[in-house]
Image 1 (cartoon, rainbow, N blue to C red):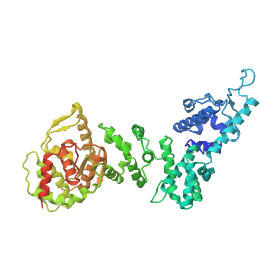
Image 2: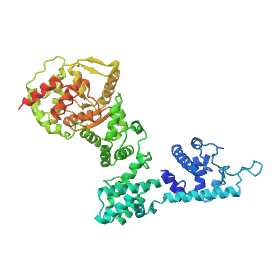
Image 3: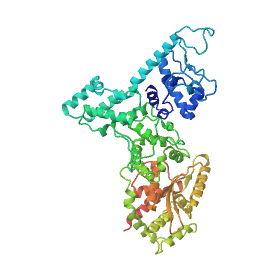
Length: 562
């Protein structure tokens, strides 16, 4: 009972089985080769020794007869190593002794006069020392047992012991229900009681506490306080409820969440890189969830919103070349092929400029295509440098292309029609360069066309190397795969991660939103094209950005078309 309670309190449920036959004395004293046999995994062994030493140090404050041990010496065990608090002269007894039989133990008791080494054999324990050991074990057993019995909480007595609790009881008696304020205060009281116990309640204990709540407040609903996880079927979900969420929030605030049974990515960067941001309880819950789980998607999306201030703080504090790659590694949820774009949509709507504008482009797209076709029909491309534009214009006259191919070709032609003819700065720092990009460079920075999917990775590497030479970062861009006028697939490229979309319309919409969701700028060569998307489709005005004259003129031309 004591051993299992301690292991649960230390958030080490995976050790319940190997320690099933170990008594309390052995738990505190086992070391050396036998500890390594019990816990082969060095990381798990380190956690166990650290938790045990911390527990011993708390007992030492009360009983100086229990000195602490060295974590490193126990984890890197070797023959002949010994504990400073409880030394096992010989570990062979473990294999030959009944699990319930205490090991021969030698305990240092500072309050007793030590005998000389010649007075008695090594390893001998005097009767007085044995009495002290038995008394100590009994004292700690009572302590741990009393702390571990979550089910023994007398809820009504807890409420009656405080002014707030008595007010909650009186409120329910008078109104036959709890107000939101009373319910919140009640959960705070119950969570405070649980935190004093310092044990993460099991599902059964949460259910038991919820039943006790209903016994006192029968008109309350159990799902409000605790809803158990659903681990099978098509609608899987994690545990939730006011009691569960508040308890996890408190543990996260005090740095006690260790993610029991979590699916944490081993190569995910440490969230402590942004821990300087003071989080609300709700945000702490969300950050803790997202650091460990990537499903169910419904819960991910809910906590994605909750963790938004935390993520925004990180994005604003990082402006290096690898920012997008680091952010994707920090929040791998964005790599989900279907839900990743939804998370970008969420962040765009949460931004100061994107509120209520998520569907703007989709609503105006058909009208734009209709008007842009009118403008294109009246234009001729005479520049010798724009042979690709001439080819696209010729393909648009074909009768055998479908609407998706037509729209893709029109967007690829946009750099030929909307020409800013301006100098831009490529890259950052001493290696940056200032020049007037050609129409070919503008088109490549807006939509990258490759003939085969295998060529895309090569193209991404080339673009990244090019930007690295000028101290810049590879920004999100669109890629169309296949020979004109057709295409086999369309992607939005975030660093080396690809989102596959169905049409050029979806690609432009998603790529534009990534600039706001990831707090990054579009490529300098195609900045005027993205400013057009920003102003024409989304009607977004940014005070710090000056309007490009060519964009204003082009929007006026579109508006004039019937």
